[in-house]
Length: 253
Ligand code: PGA
Image (cartoon, rainbow, N blue to C red; front, side, top):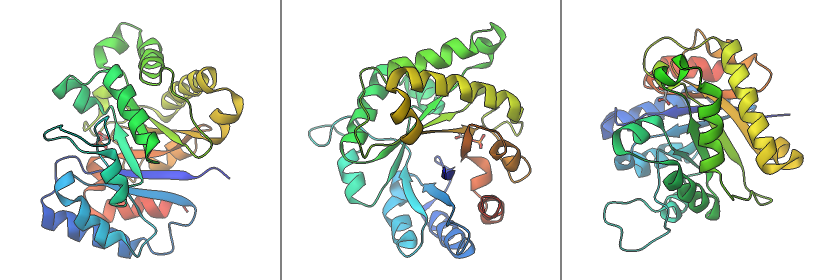
């Protein structure tokens, strides 16, 4: 059976003490509910080791919000995927639209980061999505296929590799208004087709998953899970409160 993913992206929202106490509350509240689902917390880097400590006796996994494309070296300020893996991180969000917009991150850099992450056993959560203008111009599916083709160019998924693609329409992130689940499902199928074209049947079936992100909350999470190809959610705002996030954890079982 396919896993369901519920992935919290805490962005740069929580100071250390709040991150620790939220991780503790979520770990406590989710005991018994996580068997069917892969629950992942992605704190900011300054709290990642302390959050790792809180999660060490729970089934909740640790994720990072980015990583660099080299394993080590003279790269001031960068974060090594290898060191993240050694610290217990299992997942890494790559290509989030806030990094593409604020830092000019491009598909080529994201491609290098995905390679680096896979090479140390991390599972990349590759974010793709259209802006409002791209949507109005009728280019949504093309933009998403292009982001996938460029950021996954020439990448091979080896036997133990896994790749998650998060469809995140840029214009609904943090807006409180998600897209219709049926529409997200259409885009998810476009993503699946592109993954099939890139990787072939077996790998696309066994080693990839598509999730949705953008204003997911306890009221709409289930309607995304009910779609045929959407296997979970990447959640920002609603992951910052123990109550709302644990409510969604319960909905996965
Ligand atoms: P949101 O953020 O849930 O607040 O819309 C999602 C994301 O940016 O991954």
